[in-house]
Length: 92
Image (tube, rainbow, N blue to C red; front, side, top):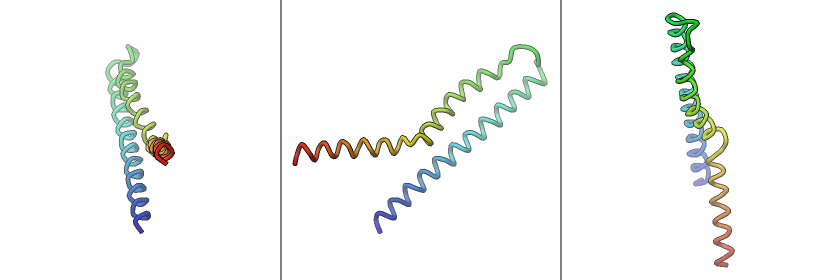
């Protein structure tokens, strides 16, 4: 029973991380669409200044995506298991 509770907790955490990323992505799209609309209404043809917030925020968004979808938590778990095995071998 304890294992099921732990798996459910982990599943909830991962689902929350994915939902948080989707919210972040939607904010990125909406805000940058707004900045682009302001650019088009005020200075179309001039220097495309919205690229800077898009790039800066995009780096953060990419890091957020990597942390959610590249299974960093799974990698941490594997490293912990490897270290536990090493410790068991040296003590056993």
